[in-house]
Length: 164
Image 1 (cartoon, rainbow, N blue to C red):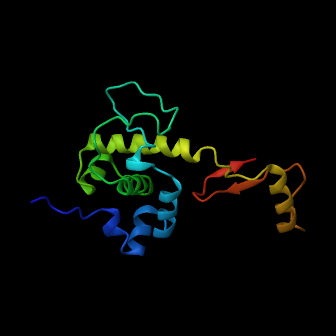
Image 2 (image 1 turned 60 degrees about the vertical axis):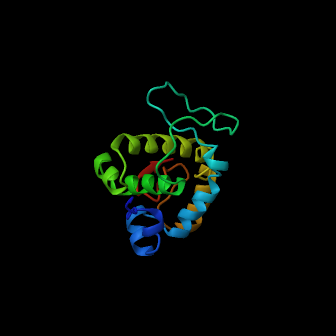
Image 3 (image 1 turned 45 degrees about the vertical axis):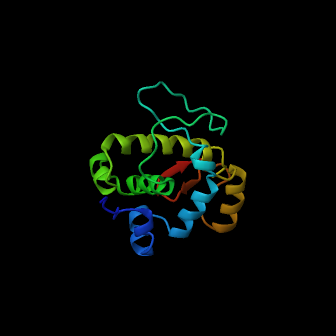
């Protein structure tokens, strides 16, 4: 009798506090991201990474034949695994133990999903133009030191600093 997975999206998403600690996101935000990604029928829009082949991830069209072995985890658990791994900075060994799969399989899932997210989300504009920042900052910081040609420091969600 196969044991039931304990660390999975289905189990962890029942507790919103635990889910946020594991992924850094709310359950609803996770679900929205997952539905936005448009995985296609039976994940036809994802090309699974195979280390034995030289692959270039330049296309995600559903006309390409999906390669690789059938995944052990469901697609929602693939994304959950990636977010847990990114948020917590845990090793591949520990991630494979959590999700009850081999280290090499975890590595393939991570490579596949990072490439898929790069192509799916990479073209979305996440930063407004420099002119829009200047207009906004002139309103917000009116009366404070802010010159027209000064560099604007913007803190993004992950608290890394970007100079415009």
